[in-house]
View 1: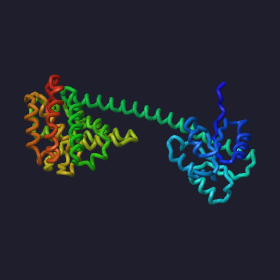
View 2 (view 1 turned 90 degrees about the vertical axis):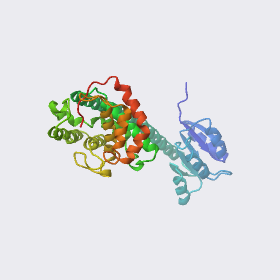
View 3 (view 1 turned 90 degrees about the horizontal axis):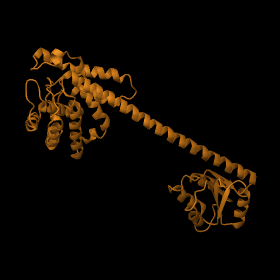
View 4 (view 1 turned 45 degrees about the horizontal axis):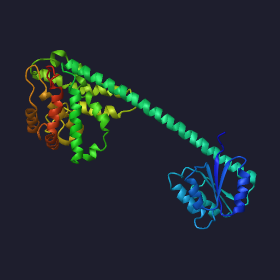
Length: 368
C-alpha cells in the first residue's frame, strides 16, 4: 500500500536530538533525519517534504543561512520551516521568523506541544494549498467566462457593423479593412517611436475591435441621403454629418449597460472624431491639430483611404496609387502630417489589403 504519511525533514548536528525527534514523529509522519544543511540539500534533490525542522547552531552552514537559501530558491521556498533550537532569546527568535520560518520552538521542548504545533502548521499549509487550488480553478473559470463574453461582444459588434454597412449599401468589408489599416499604422508608429507615450497606454485589441463602430450613427440617417447615388447637397451633407454625434450618443447608451467602459470609450472617441481635420475644417466640433484625439486622426486616414479605393455609384474606385496621392496631398490640412509620413511607409500594405477584397465589392454610396 502506498505510504500517504506527510514527510518531515529534521536537520540537527546532534545525533541524540535527531533520534529523539524521529522517535516522537515517526508514528505520525514519514521522517528523514540529516546532520547538516549540506546533507539536507542533497536530500531535497530527491524528495519534497511537507515541513522542515531546522536547528540553528550547526557547523559550516547554520540554520539561518540555510533558511535564506531555501526561501530564495523557487524549488524550496514554499516548504514551511520551523526552527527547533536552544537559542531561546527574543532576538534570535525574531531573526528566525523574519527569515520566513512559520514557527520557532525552544529546546528542550515537550513532545505533545511539539506535535501540536507541527500539526497546526501542517493544517495551515494544507488549507493554503486548497485555497490556492480553488483560486486557480476560479481564475481559470473567470478567464474562460471573460473570453466567452468578449467573443459574444465582438460578435455583436460585427453584426452591428454589418448592419450599418448593409444600410449604407456597402459590401461588408469596410470595417474589417479599416481595422487592418489601423493595425498597420499603429505597428509602424510603434516601430518608429512616434506618439509612443500615448500608444503605450492603449489596449490595442479593444481599440481595433471598437473601431468597427465608427459609423454606427449612419443607422439613423434616412435612406434618401444615405443611399443617394450622387454627391450630396449642402443641406443633405449637414444631415449626414450628424451621424458622428448620433453614433456617440448610441455608444453612450450601450456604455451605461456595462461596468467595463474601456471598449466604449475607444468607440465613442473614434465615432466622434474620425471626420475632424487637422486644419480645423472637419466635423462635428471643428477640432484642430493635436486637439483631435490620436485614434480619431488615425481613423481619418484609414476611413478616407478605404472610401477612395471603393467603387461608388457616381465614380469608379481609385487605384491605390491615386488614393495614396490624395492622402499625401492632405498632409497638414486634412491629416496629421506625422501620420501621413507614417502612411507613406505602409501604403503598399494598404494597397494589398484593399486588393484582397476588391473583387467582392459592390457599388457603395456617399460616405461623407
